[in-house]
Amino acid sequence: MDTGITSKTPITLLGLGDMGTALAHSWLAAGHPLTVWNRTREKAEPLVRGGARAADTAAEAVASAAGPVVLCLLDDDSVGETLDGADLNGKDVVNLTTGTPAQAWRRARWVNERGARFLDGGIMAVPPMIGRPETGGYVFYSGDRELFDRHREALEVPAGAEFVGEDPGHAALHDIALLSAMTGMLAGITHAFALVSREKDLDLARFAGLLAEWLGAMAGSSQEMAAQLASGDYTEGVTSNLAMMAAGNDSLLATARDQGVDPRLLVPFMELMRHRVAQGHGDEGLAGLVSLLPAAH
Ligand code: FVH
Picture: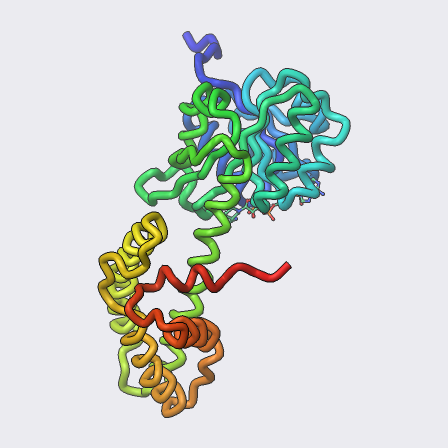
């Protein structure tokens, strides 16, 4: 006989956009009692048919929460609007809304002042990866360690969970750092395709495979950079030195010119390399470039 009683952690989820809906389906499929709320109520209907309960207001959803209150909304402003008027006292708040570290610090303080615990999360996955561990998606978490440990099993249902520290801003910092690295990589991919795409007899699908393989092989250089930054010796274990790479940039620029491609996506990085070599650091790896990046305030 199905008594409807389960030992699974009940989840309250605020926000049913593409990502929130994917999270909701994964918790339902794993048998977690689920209460949902969304500003546009209709988005809750398919989940209600699947066994979720839809709350009429965010405040009502929070009031009835016996487990973590998870937010997956557009941005930090929508989090503030959604929680405005909700009684958070004694609640566990898990914010999976993408934001900056500064927003996470402020939100943590705001939530703590209202008597609740706070965990921030940065999702490193797209909706089709949710509930599918084989895709490698995961979420960075930071903030209240005890809250994380208590709800870890439930948090690991949609995607892997990577706790990165008690500083509430560190999940967002990891998230944004990885997205920033991805942005640079996508700029490089865009430039590479601009170079080859005008060649009529070049197999772009084959090129794409070679490109992905090469980027994967080069990704290991991040460990070299980490070791150099940790020791402060930017010449430690250098595989390819800056002087050699800066000289090679001339070939990259000449080929861009010959192929009729604007090199604007690469030039700022190349200028940084040239500057560091001119400072007399041609024997370093790339770690020395980090020291050139502090922004003027
Ligand atoms: N989708 C993705 O690929 C990325 C993957 C990495 C992580 N992001 C972040 O996840 C957050 C939610 O993203 P999403 O994909 O669910 O976003 P949308 O489909 O646009 O849904 C937005 C939800 O936010 C609600 N909302 C917007 N403004 C307000 C407001 N002022 N008050 C209350 N709710 C608000 C919106 O409600 P509605 O439009 O349906 O009424 C949706 O529920 C996000 O931080 C990504 O950066 C996703």
